[in-house]
Image (cartoon, rainbow, N blue to C red; front, side, top):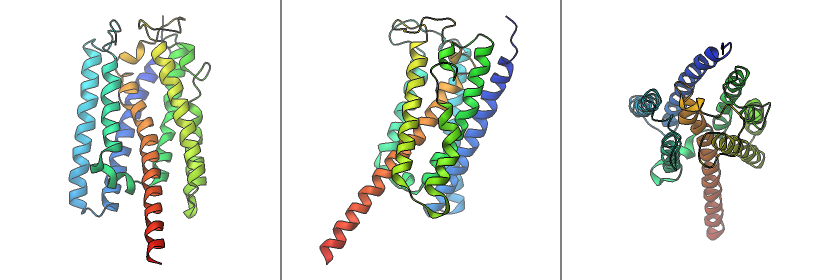
Length: 254
């Protein structure tokens, strides 16, 4: 089958991944500065983060090019390596006491604004569907409405935090909705793959995510999406805990 859109999707995933890495490093450096780090120390710490991200993308690329991620046999499939490693790493970053101060200093609005990257992701998936390479349920013509999160991200970030506003409850509601939409497509993607517990039997099976460079989607872009939600929830919890503690101390001193 002649592909019309797929080469653009391939290039798109490479370019989008590079842009998101740069945005993450920029945001990380700014956060270190907000924490009181010197510019030199912030740059050094940011470089370490950048090295880790690039190393992981290199590993994911190798696994896909070597055909390891394309092996969907077995329970669990080898492809799940790409899913489990980022999940464990991000959960560690979210809840480890060592990273509490970092999460507290990340601007809540930034955690929402960056989610706009989910719009081009959905466009790339749609292009793959048009070429018959991705099942319809993986796109907004099927069961995937995750594009709504990307479209509304800058709007809700501004509404909730623009001009000094702090509409935490609305921001929480938006993040919860975004997490639900993301979980929906992740589950759909897994159940559309040629795994023993496959549910969606229409063709093509969801195997393209195991190929380079589409592997950047499950290895980096999806983890980026849920990590921003996790960080937001953790930040909100830490702020609420701090506020409650301050109120208790204030009452105790009266």
